[in-house]
Image (cartoon, rainbow, N blue to C red; front, side):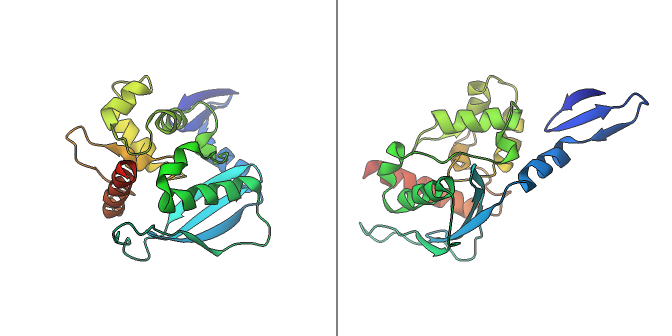
Length: 213
């Protein structure tokens, strides 16, 4: 059986000439083998759900159930656990602790360890995985990068539009900071498929103020 690559999925060519996409299905099967648990946080952005297993964090979801909190002087922002299972993995707990620090003591996040990631989109040598790893490694707190420049940093200078697609597929926003990727014009650009543009503005302001402070 010959397997050809096409984007994020695998195309299978059988000896009989039939084709089908198996990449997405295989990824779902690998993910479903994990015993995942969810911790819910009350953050300045509203409820954030962090889901993961003993091997690492799978997803982060920002539910957008309330308007983002306004900053009031020097008062620190809070991010507290709202709901958690009795037992959680060290990796999941590490992710929660990082997020809590990101909101309440953002200047400390550079020295805190990130959790392992265990979502299929971050496994293997796919375009999405490479771009997100470069973003995580090279674009630090308080910095921004254009889609075009990130494509160049990832070794694919003509793939600025595809970089936008990789940002939309980021399973762990905040931990992997897709909000730091902006348009070449300096505009912030879309976030969460355009539904969370106001959150992107909030996050960029939060980091700028945290860096200045």
